Amino acid sequence: MLSLKTSVSATALALAFLSAQGVAAETLNTPRLSSADNFRDIAGTTTAYSTARNGVMRQGVFYRSNALTLSDADLATVNTLGISDVYDLRTPGEVATAPDRVPTGASYTNVNLMGNASVHFNPTTADEARAFMQDGERAYVNNSDMRGRLAGMLNDMAAADGASLFHCTAGKDRTGWTAAVLQSLAGVSDADIMTNYLATNDYTADRVAATMAYLNATNPAYAEIMGPVMGVEASYLQAGLDEVASQYGTMQNYLTEGLGLSQETIYVLRGKMVRYSI
Image (cartoon, rainbow, N blue to C red; front, side, top):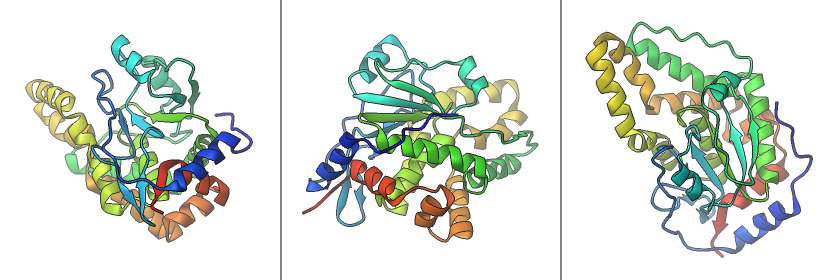
């Protein structure tokens, strides 16, 4: 379990203030990594997203990714991004199988978002696989252990002085939910949040196509079942968002009641992510 910072740092509070001074939308310059193909900035894909209250997402604050099994060249690139904190959402078993290469000077925390959840993945049809994926998104809302671990990480992120990077194995499910929560907190529109979630399919297209080609050649029946698991579908994230609406009414209530975040933490996270027009 992660060791939480006890308070929001002075630097983080300063960033929150400075980010409210207002700028126009900007083109993003996030690098593409060959050894971590789902690495990207949650601010957007090509251009920073607009937010509520005439805001614009600020790049270089929160990065999302799949496992950081980085090549030397990609690690050198990541080392230029000012990342101070890495949050690994994987289980200890996943970590042992493929340890991260952490950016120089960055603090590493294994959050293990799944916690003690018991996962039994044995679908026999593609529809059962889709149902499994949808249930996984709902669990981030209705599982108290997962909520506690996510809350701890968000509190840590608010206190971080530099950029933060969070990831799981594929960078699409645990990571996708975390990104959606942060973007919603920032005031990104529902449509842009979904577009960003689905962008995984574009970023990982070559790797997934190669995997599916192999499965289709060796075990077509299994390939059909696994197809829905290899990428993401709108119904997956929507299942989690619908669970928020069902259990808490609004994302704000999920943040404060479900995750137990203070209003100060919410303001600091929003201030880090968003620049507002004057």
